[in-house]
Image (cartoon, rainbow, N blue to C red; front, side):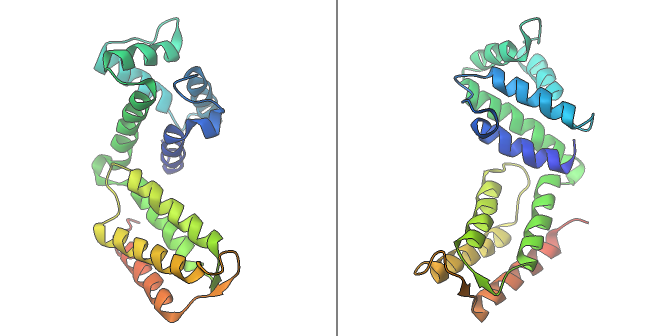
Length: 200
């Protein structure tokens, strides 16, 4: 599984409807179709679906037989006494976290740190709600990640940057607002923290 797969699949499991057009509880067959198509497109680089099938068989004793993965998911979630949606998210996260954090590689958060550094290095002299919204969305998603994550210091610094930039643009929203020195300093401090913790 590639770093990119970890990012895409984490986003997918939490927002399946964005990818399939259907909610998990109403149509969990669409999950299987998406995962099969995704793995075909990954050309052998991603085996998430098969790992999930194997995990449900070993943990819950539910094999993937002629009824396929959707039926396996249905039976296993019933045995775990969880909704299909919650069960799918929990079991999927377990696989993604194990893959990301094995051998202390912390691939998910490391990838995110690099992306944040890239984004902050392109911090414009004038900003509007688009930049702030994009940055805040990435930080919110990181908060949902239950594996090894940003340090408390990094997270706090990112949240202060979001808060201060929101305050700056609040009166004007869509207009471009010149970034004052205090916010640039905050941004530079966050970049320094992220660089210190990123694994090359």
